[in-house]
Length: 392
Image 1 (cartoon, one colour):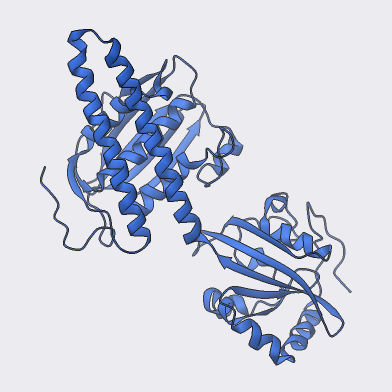
Image 2 (cartoon, rainbow, N blue to C red; image 1 turned 60 degrees about the horizontal axis):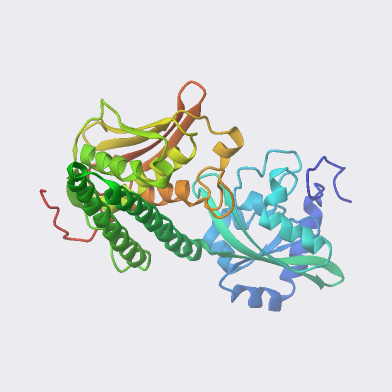
C-alpha cells in the first residue's frame, strides 16, 4: 500500500514503498526488449510508476547523470535533477506551489489522466549543474498489467541559446537605433553651435550599431564553435561615458537624468568591448525604464584588485521580492510578455562572453544596483588563439 496521506500543493504526495519499487524494476528488467529499445534513444529516458517514482533508466540517462543518480530507484524527476524546490515539502517533487508552473510536473499530471504530453521547462538546480532546460515527453503505457510512464527528457539548452542570441541581437540593435533617431531629431532642430556636437554623437551611435551587428555575427559563430570574441584594448571609464551618452538620448532616457558617477575610476582592459557595451546598455535601459519621470540613474566603474573592474548602474526604485527571485530568467519581465531579455542577456553575455559575474542588490536603503565584475583580460578560451590585443 502507498504511504499515508501527505499535504500537497499540486500532485499527490504518496509514494510506493521500496519493496514495490524494486519489484517494478525487476519486472521491467525481465523484459530485455524494453531495455534494448530505450538504450538506443539519444534522449534521457526514465520509466515512472503511478506515484511518479523512477523504476528504470536508459543508457543516455546513466551517461549524463552518473551511476549514483541512476541507482536511485524510487526518486522523482525533480529529485533526480536536483531541483532547488524538490525538498521544500515532505512530499517532495511535484507537491510544492512552484510545481504548478513546472513543465515536468504538468506532463506527469496529464499522464495521471491517461494522456500523453509534451512540455518544456527550466529548473534551477543545486550544484554541480545550476540549471536544466529540457523538453519532456510523458507517455503512459502498460506492462504485465501494471501502469507506467515513459518519461523522456531532451536537453534544449543549445537550441534555446541560439534563439535567445537572435532575439537579444534585435533587442539591442533597436535600442541603439532608437538612440540614433533621438539624436537625429535633436540635430534637425539644433542651433548651429550645437549641430557639430550632435553630429559627433551620431557618429558614435552609428559605430555602436555596427558594433552590435559585428558582435552578433561573432556570437553566432561562437555558438557554432567557429569563432571566439576578439579582445581589444580600451579604458573602462570611457566605455561607461559612451554608454551614458548613448542612452541619455534614447526613448527610455527622456525626462530622466542619466549621470556618470563623480567617483568613477579608470583602468585599462583587454576584452570584448562590443559585448561589454551591450551589457552596460541593457543595465542602463532597464534602470531608466524602472523609474518615473524626473528620476536620476547613475552609472560608474571601480577597480576590484589588479585583475578586475566592476561596472555598475544604480536606480533608486526597489524591485519587488517576487521579481528578484526570477530576474535572470529568459522569459521573465516586470514589463510584460516577450520583454524579459534585458537581464537575461546581461547574464549570458557578461558571464559566458566576458567570463565575468553579473549580480544585483535591491533594497529600500540602497535602491537597485546591477553590476558586472569583468576581468581586465578576456579569460583564456574565450577569444581566438593568437589574437593580438591592440594597445589603443
